[in-house]
Length: 268
Ligand code: SAH
Image (cartoon, rainbow, N blue to C red; front, side, top):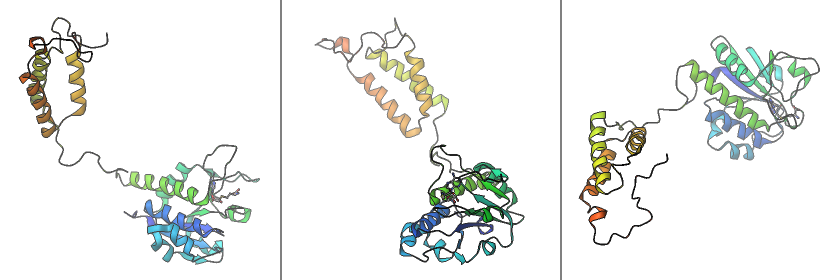
C-alpha cells in the first residue's frame, strides 16, 4: 500500500545517465510505497530500458516530473537531504540513513521533503550539496563506498517505510499466524501427554526404570509447536495406534533392531 506521506516526499535524481537506473529506482520506490519521482535533466528519458526495469512501477515513470535545474526540483521543500558516498572538503551536517528517515518522517506533516540522489559517475556536485540541509551517507566498506544509484534509492526508501510505519504504529509485517489457527488449550494437551506416555511405555520406548527426562523433553517440544485441533487429533491418533500395536517384547521374533532402543534414549 502506498504510504499516506508519499505525495509529500520527492525522490530527486540528478543527471542520471543510465535509464535503467531510473526504472530500477522507480521500482524501489513503489515497493516501499513512495511515488513522487523528479528527474533533473536525465540523459535519456522516457526510455524503453527505464520502463522495462520499472516493471510494475511504470506508473511512477509516467507521473515523473522532468525539470531542467535542481532549484526547480526542490522548490517549496522545507527539508532537503542529499545522499553522497563521500565526505566533502567543507564538512556539511551529516545524518546516517536512520537519522535521515526519522527526520523526514517527523517533518513530513509540516512541509515537502526532498531526497536527492546524484549522478552515477560524479555524484552530487558541491553547489548541489550546498543547497542541502543535510547530507546522508550510507555506511559501506571503506574500500568501496559507492553504491549503485538504484540500490542507494532502495535503502533510503526502505528506511523511510520502516519509520513511517513505526510513526503510524503499524507493524512492518502483517501478523504471521494464520487467522484460523487456534492452539489447543492445556487440558487437551494434558490428555495427549498422558496418552503419549502410556503409548511409549507400551511399545517399550520409555523405560520406567530409567525414564530420564524423555517426557519433559517431549512436553517442551509439543508445547513449543502449540498444535491446533487438527494437529492434536493427528498426534492423539499416532499415540492410539502405538497403544494398539503389539508390544515389541511380546512379538514372536525379538531380534533387537538398532533403531529401537531398549532403554530410554536421552542424553545425560
Ligand atoms: N562516484 C560517485 C558515486 C555516485 S553513485 C560519488 O563519488 O559520489 C550515485 C548516487 O548514489 C550518489 O550520488 C548517491 O546519491 C548515491 N549513493 C551511492 N553510494 C552512496 C553511499 N554510500 N551513501 C549515500 N549515497 C550513496
